[in-house]
Figure 1 (cartoon, rainbow, N blue to C red):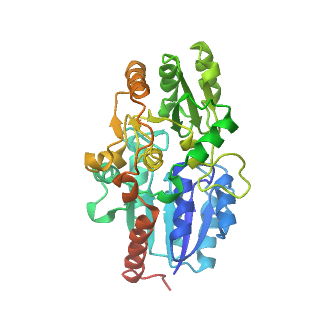
Figure 2 (figure 1 turned 90 degrees about the vertical axis):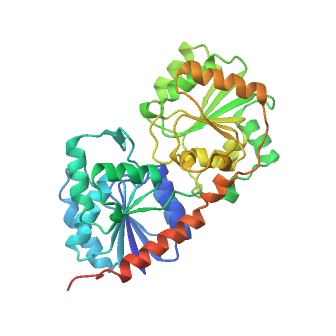
Length: 377
């Protein structure tokens, strides 16, 4: 089977890295088209052995990209087109139809309660989304919570399939050597109480609240892994709170790392932390929380469908908390006092192993291709 993946961009982000992981585990011939930004994850995908073609799309309304994409699909002779992220789902479904490919799967990575990929949800956004969705075969929701949101938007339940995001669980197993070496590289004392977070530095993640909460816990230090538009604002907030020397913004980190990536990888950075905090109030899955649990970290989170959709006993190290600065600070003080150390990998982490997700997706591919005319004549 030959599959083309179409994605909006390939800078470092959750959906982008999830695609890279899936490509490593799917037993099909895969190729990738990125509409924009052939960044770090694109380089990683190429280093893994999968071709990536940049479409060089100029913007959301660059309609000239549509015939270029349709031509790529037509010439490639693909059995199935799989789209990822809002813009790629819209353009990719239309292009697949124009090229005569009827087997089209789309993964919905980013539909929150109030936004989709940072866009405010509106009647126009919803109408455009639904118009494109009808051109595909199946929409994959990365969690039951996202499936319910899709249904509320008007997507027929029969067209939705839940296939969760996944992680390479074994890569995140904690080691003392990784903890010691990473703290040395980052300049973190061995006995420091290190609060961690991972994600894009954008307003929706509310890392500014975590900065202020850490500032009120005198012995705490904050390690944030990610890049984004809020980097300068977070550094200013740390300075205003008198915590500039206790806040470290490490920058984005590919997972798995591209060959040219330097410095500690994500499992090593998680090993350097003592507690993990997710402050975002509107998540579609919560992949970073699952990765932290796999690393044996106690986790405090404001919203995480990946955990809330499972029985509580599957993630005993995870605790849901309020998102205000005072609530975050109180939870951090409790965590500092408890200092439970490393926890065993919970059932939740093993439940979301990428191999399981890849098998479910492969089953969907086979069902879609064998039950659908592949190409029109």
